[in-house]
Length: 377
Ligand SMILES: *Cc1c(COP(=O)(O)O)cnc(C)c1O
Image (cartoon, rainbow, N blue to C red; front, side, top):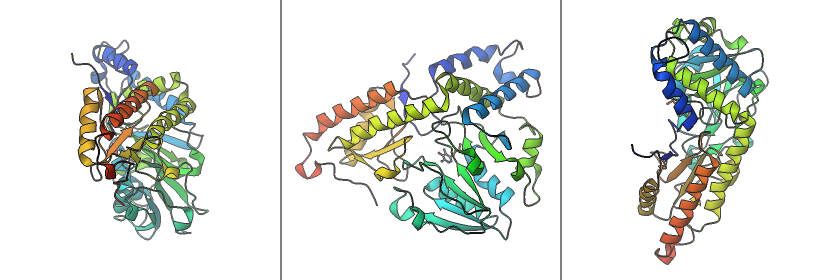
């Protein structure tokens, strides 16, 4: 058996060893069913119980108030790019989108199929390496909703507070990469969605928190596309991804055992601070993102040359540290610090970064020393 590596990939992410062990034990025998989890029927009492405990646990962890539904749907976050405007953006209505990354841009483009999209702010001209300030943001007073991405997984920016929304509109948030790494004030939102394979488990589920008065769509839709259908059916309108929900259950229990979201937030802060300190204290690495907008989940950085960036990844992989590639459209490097990555593992990466910088910096031509940013703007 090859040894397990430590993956800093942007998703699917690593799972804790304990979760893998529990999953393994359930492959042949799930509870007292005489069946394995891969074979468990979605109409069985055991699945009913699994579903209910998962939803209860997640509601408690995230602090979902009464008056909000939690749905577990097919299609990942990407499906929500379409489902949200299909349900809530009428042909004559306007939705505001804050375009702070490639995913946010894709969400805005899909919404434009259904109604008017106002790009309330965009940092595309700055390669999404910063967030827009409130005075660069022009919101529509009559907008149906304001959509934002809480954490830009690709470039590594993060809203520390939700943006404001005019009275009478509501916030919609793609929280795919930072839900469960920090607290969210759900009551400030109409709808929050996240994919499952970053902090919550494995691919196959989208997690949707929706205010009860927003279940009814504004237009006639095929039933599968309507939030109302899935709320009525307890997210079992058709066969749900049983195994992915089981992994979500294991991850939710694991997260509780670690001390819940408050503990995850402290850990997330400590892990990212360690890496940013390593970057800032060196004259070899350059952080890509404006300091005030830095993400605690995705730490992005550049090395003095593209050749060194390639070498960095090869040598890191030799030490069992993988998945450090930057977003495919920008390159450079990125360490994704999802919940299952321990502080210890981040310590190993920081140590490797220091060793690598010490070994390579000496041999660099003078003009390349001093951590000149090669960062595209
Ligand atoms: C990963 C990610 C997505 C896409 O998730 P899928 O599971 O591929 O649908 C969307 N938005 C953000 C912010 C992400 O990080």
